[in-house]
Length: 294
Image 1 (tube, one colour):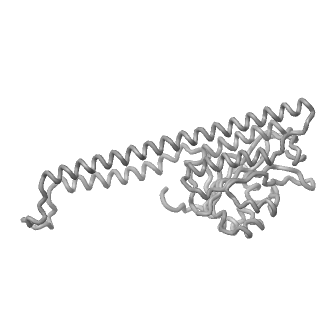
Image 2 (tube, one colour):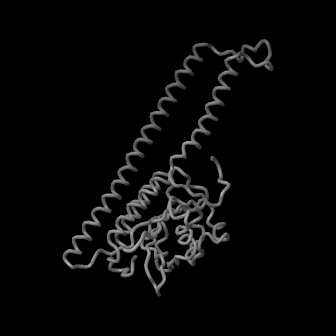
């Protein structure tokens, strides 16, 4: 669907169906081009005068020169597009590899420290490193510089499961000072533990409307940094908590513009969330600054 979405929130299990939108657009553009070609090839339109003044007559040599120039220009534009697309595609693959690479290295370091009886690395260092890579990836993928990334991880506070933000990128750094835990029973955390919401990706096209609909929890940071997050794509980070399959964390990709994200972004989002889940599940209750991490 092109243009604005008619739904406040959309849920996708994968991105395989995103080709439909592109097909509609390309078929429409191709059809318009074909109709124009047929229309112009059938001769002079009926509303033109029978005799065209010499002023409007063009030398065939000039027509040929214009056609050659247009063909060369089209080739240059096409080549530039393909080069840019190839470069960006390779860059994104490189970033995804770095995310997996970083995850492996952190896991190896954690296991190494555990065998020596030392404390494990600070989860905030791990989270910020990953968020910075995720930020670079989605900034390139969406062609927007104002993309934000946040990572919340489960913890137990006052015998209640909450989700604390432990990593950010592309968002105001002052958010950390006034960040609030998100209870498992409210907002996105509650939605992601629902039967249908616990898998796949949720895209909220209008955060302000979602707050009014009580789908999204309105925090002090949302008020203080008003306008920084207007749309958000959310992935559950599911994994083994030592006793059962649970929501270990929440990954957010944000934008200060509405209707930025669509189905085509869901598969890389799911890949990144699952990669993070492997770290959290493998290091259950081991991080030194969140002793109650699930």
